[in-house]
Image 1 (cartoon, rainbow, N blue to C red):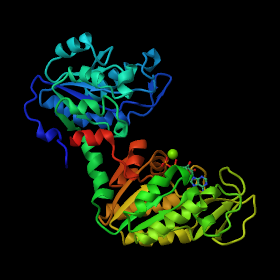
Image 2 (image 1 turned 180 degrees about the horizontal axis):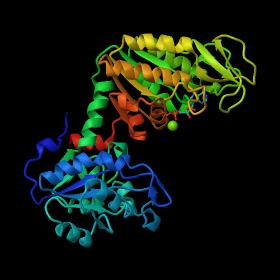
Image 3 (image 1 turned 30 degrees about the vertical axis):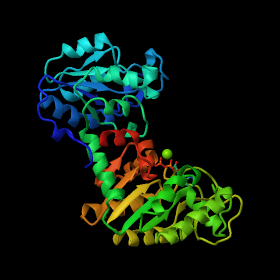
Image 4 (image 1 turned 120 degrees about the horizontal axis):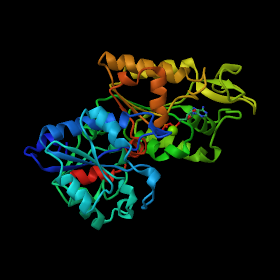
Length: 398
Ligand code: ADP
Ligand code: MG
């Protein structure tokens, strides 16, 4: 790995580690409804405190846009984190400043403090070097454990990493290692699955992947645009007809790069957008009416995809193959996910998946834990799949 990890730090006794985490947790009526992001940070906190470091946690919450917005305070996270850690977590009312510095100073070796929402300061999102210097003053080392925030060049993710010794935290390291196995340095043959609703949101992603993968399966609503571009009837389906030429360009680029594109061979069609409506399965090329909408891929498509997957060593997956929220249009996604899980469990496949709805679909299929790695990083994961440089990661590489 081209960056330093926590294994590279030795003497931290009484020193302060400023750790950027992602504590932007979902909240309803003041209650945290999913504490995954807190749990993900535990290995880094525990590793640092075990080395005797004082840990100051730095995070954003919501979008206060550079102003103090009391309803966006991070204070409520401290007791929840304390419960998970099994030790006290102090709280500082500001991410920077003399009082915060004093509060860190007052911590015992191995103590933990959470700092107030870093986005209360305008310098955070502008990546202001002066604000980064105020942050850097608080600590001896900087640790970035928030891959999900690494696609933004902010003071707490980018500028600070250039001011004091910077390290990747455990979750950051895990994420980058998995992503490298999937796309950076994968075992071939490699298969990508890209689904979801629209081609327009995933153009950069498709363009990057066709240059890198041996096979690319295009599914979900975006497959309709590709089918339409090839002259097949898509009826009243979600379809970006204006992107016909773009779809053809992507297919040509794939052919040029020796990436085989897999499009649906058969489709599941219905007229009503609801659970369990009347529906039928057709081969592509069948005539569809304007009321017909393609909501899922059919069994022949899944069969072909699983055959290719059986011969693949690496799978990278973003986007469901159908409207998985409405049964029975979850069928292709669930069957494919189960097959990927089986291949992974038997050691034949490295399977890495990410994306908000993709994670939900894999959970729905009951196989999220059976994949090699499931990224919950959202935008950062997608930008990484697009082949973009993530400023927060680049800054760690120095
Ligand atoms: P992710 O969040 O994993 O990146 P997307 O947001 O791109 O995924 O896509 C997920 C959405 O795509 C889901 O809400 C799903 O219902 C929708 N979708 C999948 N297939 C179709 C289809 N054939 N027609 C319309 N929407 C679809
Ligand atoms: Mg989504």
